[in-house]
Image 1 (cartoon, rainbow, N blue to C red):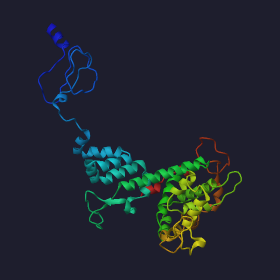
Image 2 (image 1 turned 45 degrees about the vertical axis):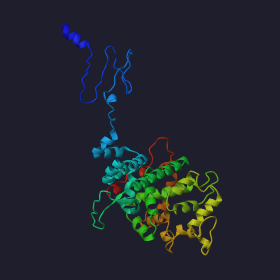
Image 3 (image 1 turned 90 degrees about the horizontal axis):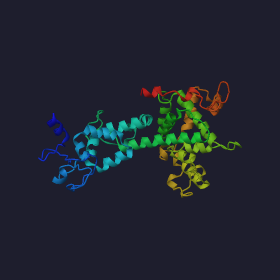
Image 4 (image 1 turned 60 degrees about the vertical axis):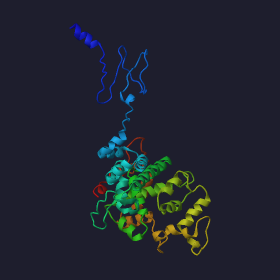
Length: 375
């Protein structure tokens, strides 16, 4: 027993080299954490005396990222948890990462899109934005047989849907900060409005607005409610002075980014900027002008109001106009519900009692997009 006790108290020291790093500990010291010095420990010191054998042999340090090149499944898992900017940077600077992600581009991009902006990924499908797609780096053929290599969503498409998701959320926040409550479903409806803004021809817009699976009656109601709340944002709350022309001008643009800047008071800050926006939207009396006007190039005067963004000659109907026309075609009688839309979020539409703070609002905004989930 005495020999066993003495053997247990003595630290184990190995002097013979073996495979892998060897940790050496001097007798009478405590094994605490320390840094690798790359030299033999000095004699006569107390404290940590732990070091690796490869510090003295000059062996190369272990590179985790290089070791992962043999495990593409781990590369893909890492890519799923990166931010978009980090993913783009790593994709552009690492050859190994670029090769692995290129072979699984659709998997990585669609996972990021459906996790971070699911509704935007469904409403802005990459198949309708071919300029934001790339040929499959792995060379997989097109299943429809229209091309030798299929098109897959690119990182540019991912950035686009995430940008639009952020703009829509900030628009809703800005309207709420003005004191006008919006149903939660407004975010989904705004994305559908933006998708229609990308369409530059009346016939295609009409086909989409009449698709009741895409534009349900509830969507038309929430869109009309949003237009009314937007008009209230541009109206003086005390005097009531205001008009709908600014809302019409902003909805007639090609994106909702201008609307966000206006609500944030970063856009249309003076009369000149408002005049430039108006001239770019409609020619009006400037139909025969062949010179630049107020800083707007003559090639851009009135292009927003015409089909094809100036290519055609017919007037391009605004989204709010088409929603009103479709609501009338479906006989939804929205004109009898304008007062309820104005009071939504403030007053119970049945009892006309002011909502208490924290009380659940009208279920119009709580319903999910069950029809779209089936698409």
